[in-house]
Length: 392
Image (cartoon, rainbow, N blue to C red; front, top):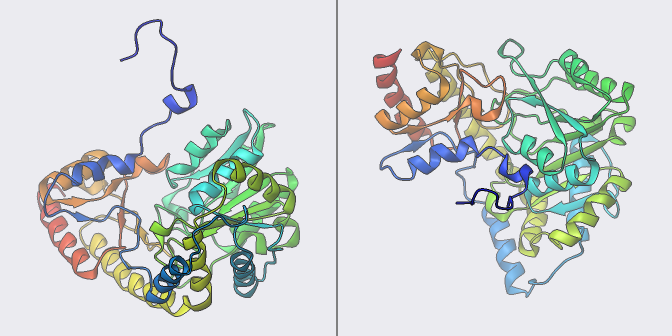
């Protein structure tokens, strides 16, 4: 314990960060038997075999050395070709793309490269827990804008307008959304673009779940116009689409002056993304498409099971159109979201995450993830039915 009058050993930024609300419940669940987890946002699929084999070949061929700071040119070319073919947005692989250690590092690099102390970043919530923390660690100020159930948790552009101040520098968006499964329609994205242009703001768009959409066509933000491409940093990766979370490989794309700043930080902190993971990602772009489609079809089957089941139990759930999360309203239980999650875990050994862990707008909801087997979801719903018969 630090003595009175002793020097503060941790920076105020770090000491003031809240612990992850996600991790708390899974630390508890790890001490229990027979827990069904509807919590951790990670595909339950193993990385497809051709991608695994590419990583193994990379090691066997002695590819155990650093690459270019920006990543292998073949990988950057593959990312550029994929974005051009899928969304008709073009990036120069030599100067406008960097391979990173997952999207987490891409977030860190982007905010650290762009923000001055006190700069504000507008962030729609509920959102992934890292967004506000990365802004704070970069010296910025997160400005949270709660999205609403009546809009299917897509941000209202008017709320963005109201939040802009002279210190605003970035509008951050992350669709499809973790934790809600929300997507943003094209007209909403276009209006966000108009706001960014009117106020000369940058946009950071996290599109890690771009391929995991259902009855919806993903809107790639920088593809909306060339002028928006020039003020946007696009974040993406391989973890969710290709079931490659443990490989830790992502990327950032954007105008060359911004990416140059990211590379400058990256070369001093990381050097280069893991070489083995880069080679696996190259293979994913070449041959992974059919596997992605198979996984999306199975996620869709589970999505329908979980949404229908939760609604049947009185836990009102809107239909998520992306990612692999549902965000049910749990007020019918008479509990707040933390009490609901704690009691459900203790009584029925089903793990979900309280909505308040994801920021304003999450109170009264929980996140339930369907990146687990169909049979496990069926059993979780049976247990939740017993739970709601006592508490609903």
